[in-house]
Image (tube, rainbow, N blue to C red; front, side):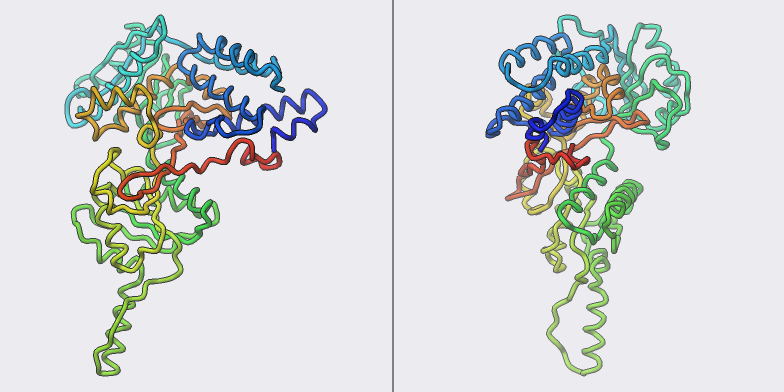
Length: 464
């Protein structure tokens, strides 16, 4: 393990490389799993506490140096070097780029008003909670007026002194921005362009991308030793996007998708799709043929196909509450079901008893957060609970926008946010690593799947 490896390293260069590997592993560990309690190794415990200190100051770079000095005082014998600590502080300080003014561009009227209201509430709440002496000025611009282009609003925001722009939300505007090479002020969009490539270094894309969730479902299924999947998704463009994302990642990792069914979104009976998914129609046909041949009525129990070892389900919580019981009725109750966050409303509901056993990924905000921000939401914005994840998106958008350079500069860099452990790819698109839960007695129960830092193998590049 990396911590134990330290005693066998001879040169400062070897030790520095080992420290970087330990730090990279800690960066990938979600907050809920980053707990020093119960860790016997003093050095490992010190590493975890160091990671906690830096995460607590991700949105307050001015306090970071004091927290690191305090940590060093409490851990005088820790093997981490002063040079390494100095580098960590410098990386944050020099890449944290505060602004005097941030422009927020959202549709404040029309069909997306409720969505925009929740995001705006998250942004404003994060601004209040920041605690900095000098906060950026927030200016809000309405993108719902069809007579005013986004470019006009963008130019107006620059004239008003904006150092960053958060928004827009609509794909059409983001697609156009991705083809624009001349963006003078960094833009953090709240959705993604259809083409992953963009021409400007100042365009950053962030949102609740469902394809990321489908890919993470595939990764967990493979980790759980499932290799043959049935895919059940709605008959819609959204459903096919999740189908494609899951299938591509699942097969890339060595799995095989053996059957796919698209269910209608306007019905409550999924029998036809499930019978086809599990070849129960063929079983029924064999039963009828045998009765005809023998000329007598036979007792019959349908026999589903046996070459599937898991189901990937994409759907809303309403659809999932109908599909899961139907799976059991159609003799597939023994198959594990993996799903995206969409199967959970985000708040406790007695109707979720119908989702018993379903494994799904979701935001830290939804599954584990007990932050003051979550308490504020439950108190002040409780009428918007349907949009709880969008509120979390607003919180992270505000906190991330001034940390974009840090995420862009370092491959291992992560921002521990309410929507997930956030990283940036080479196309300046942000991705969220989510948490996992299983429905038990109608409630989502968090599943800690993180490999403890002290068990990280030194010779495993995927874990270091």
